[in-house]
Length: 324
Image (cartoon, rainbow, N blue to C red; front, side):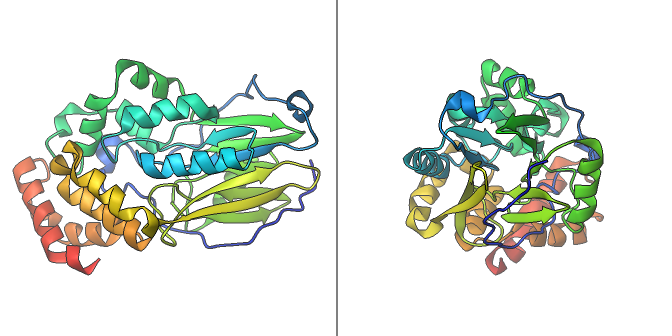
């Protein structure tokens, strides 16, 4: 195993997982089992690329935010990255599902799927009228057959080897973000790796644990720590370094908001879009307080009745939206 001497510049970690609003009985528990994977046959040695180092752009949790994805790709190319790694959750939060996946296919050297892709692959048409499921229905109906097959072809986890470093790629929706060391132990028991690249909670973190690097690049779309879009460049030289790249949201927020408000997705998912935009603007997580308020009263309605469900959904936002 290589010895790590990483430039860490540590920032925060920890958050309840993003998609709690989807009922567990409909699409499965968040405590998913760690997927079984095979080594990637396309793994490369640094000498096959040339030079004494290789730079990886690590990007995660895009959620159809094409504006910020383009920022990251342009910045990565300007910084002469050699390969792109994408860690899942590309779709479901806007009208640009196919466009996002086309960029992933164009630039992605290593691509895995996240829980959002799994939700779409397990689409349940019986839930399509419920406010907390419309975004999944919209995405399922929006995707081309080719892109639906593409996300189906993606692995849930993967091990690649670059310059003698074994790198585990995993989205992280089975991680316990309140006890990351426990999650680290679980993946260490199952996989042989030097570096684990994970995502899901929309917070950047870097940790050396038992001589392994665990890196979460943060989200390039919906930050839950600071009002900046984030991704990382990993430089795999003899002494690897990790560089956090950030973009101030205020520079592009109004344009993004206009794009959302002019989309059909916005009109069909008004509350959800307002929660997304508020969270992006403030760099904070707005979903949990909204759901906490919703769940206070949800037991008093028939959750199988979309009319009752959606009326409470709207009423909850009217009560709490301005306080988020």
